[in-house]
Image (tube, rainbow over all chains, first blue to last red; front, side):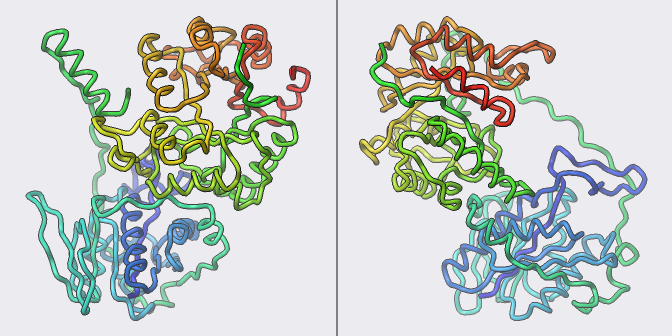
Length: 262
Length: 265
C-alpha cells in the first residue's frame, strides 16, 4: 500500500497577514507551521502502514523552506518526503496547485491512496484534495472521519456530514480528505526528528514532473482574490448564571471542572 | 524539622528543546551542557513537560538519545496529564530504567496538538477530566514504590481551596510540594510549612529580572518596570525558609549559575 500525504506550510494562526495590494497572504518573514489538518492525514497514513504495511510519502509544494513540513512528516512516521519547488509554480491557485500535485503523484507511481487534510487553515478552500482527484480521475471522499477497512482493492470509510455520516466504498487508487475526528496525531519524538534531519529530500521542478507551463503558476490560475477582509473579532464566550446563590455556585464549580480549571 | 531533604543542592529547571526549533543540534548541545553542569554541581535537574503548552521533546528521550549520565536523586521529571496512555507508560518506564525516582506531577497547560489522558484510562471515576490528583493515584497504583511524587502548591489561589486540593494530592500519593514563585516571603507558604511540618516544601525562586511575567501566576498585574533582583530574592528565601529547598526557574546559566556558589549552605 503506497500512500501519499499532501501537506502544506501555513502561517502560524497569530501571524497571518494579508498583502493589501495583492490580497495574498504574506509568507515572508513569518513563523510557519504544518497545516494542523494535515497532521491528521499523516497519522491516518502511518496507521494504515502499521496495519497493512507499505510506504508513506509526504508531498508538498512551496518555497525551499517548505522542506521543514516534510521533515515534520518524516518525524511522525512518513518514510520519505518530496518537495515541489520552482518559481514557475508561484502564484498557483488551488486548481493549478492540485494539477502540479497530481502530476507529482503520477511521477511517484504505483500510488494507492492520497490523503489530505480537509482544508488548509490559511486559504480555507478545501479544494486541493478534490482537485487532485479530478486531475487524476480517481474516486474521492471528503471529510472522512474513519477508515473502516482496506481490502480487495477498496477502501471503506465513514464520511462526516451535518446529520451524521455516510459509509462509502472507494475503489483504489483514490483520494480522501480527513477531519479531526479520524484520529489523535502522535506526538513527535526526538528519535524521529533526528532521523528526519538526516534524510535527503529530493526537490522536483516543474519539468521534472512534466507539468505543462501553461497550467501552472499565476497565469494558469482561474481564480482571483478580489477582496479580503479580516474576520470580525470573536466575543469571549460568557456564561450567565441567574439561579440562586447555591445553584450558581454548583453550576460554576461544575463548569470549571468541565473545563479542567479546578 | 523536616523529615528529609530531597537534594543537597538547588532544584534547577531545564527546558528541553522545543519541537519547532530550527536549531535542533544547537539546542540539544545547550541542554546537555546545562544538564551536565547541574549533575556536576550536585544540584537536581528538573526537566519540564511541554511547559506553557509549548511542544517540546520529552526529558527522558533527550537523556536517552544523548546518553547523559543520570546521578541518583539528581533528576526530576515534570509529568502532566497531556499524554496518551502509551506515551505516559513509555515515560514512566524510561524513568525507571534511568533510575529517575522523582516526578513532579501536574495537571499541565495542554495544547491543541497534545492528547489528554481520559478518566477511563487511569481508572478514575466520577470526574470529567484527569487532573494531577488522578494521575498521581494512577502512578502510585501502577508503579507502587517506584517514584517519589511531588505536586505543585499555589499560594496565590484562594487559601481554603488550595489546601483542600493539597489534601487530595497528598491522599493520592504526593510526598513533597513545590510552590509557585515566592517573592521574599508569603504567609500562605508559612502556613503550609507549619501545617505540614514533615512534608518537604520546595520554594520556587523566580530567577528572571522580568517580574511582570509572573502576573498570570499571581493573579494580578505586575507593572513591567517593577524593579527586581533575583539573587537578592533568593537570599531572602534562604533567610525566611532556612529549612526549605529552593527551585530555580528561568535561571540564567551564563550569568547566574556561577553566582550560586556563595549561597550554597
